Length: 253
Image 1: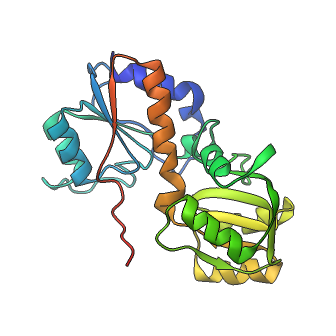
Image 2: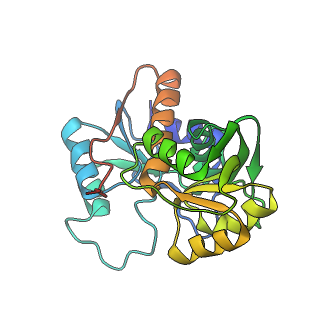
Image 3: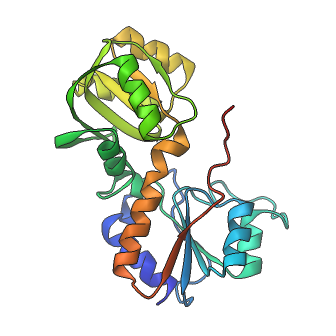
């Protein structure tokens, strides 16, 4: 099996044609013709993740966040990109295309957050379905639901602001989704659950009467890595897929 085979399968459900203009997803390092017997999966490709891949004998890393995002002006020997090339490890990064796909980051997020039944998309101004919206099995008080989210996602810290005060119709946007407040409100949600929100966004949501919950960027997107592992293992039965032990770099005290 080659790295290109994995790219092609990923493209079949998380099309790289759907990548946002500002994003840099795709086959970023190495050759699609590279023979692959072991793959490391990670939310990010850091120096520690590349070293881990090298030590475990992985020929390919598949990540959510791009290892090359802005134009490279220097290439330090300790940088992840330099080490990928040095060790001959390929890198496929599926960012915004995995956010909008089904299955994808936000379909997994919605399921784990307790949304069920007729879950619909929450699209941005370009029509890309970055979020999902649906209802819960019952109404919750905002604090009660925020506490349940902290437990479900094992979030070190969960921040929330009170809008309506009750939670029933929830919009979810994995990662940084604070700019979806207006869209969530227009879609009829009483709550926006996301992975990253700024202080002024909490104030804005509260003024609109919308509950806003920030459950952590890593914790809201990381479940999709395990989804990829399951899908890849079913498709490529002779290849070993590992989840990185060095993904979570942000610690809570």
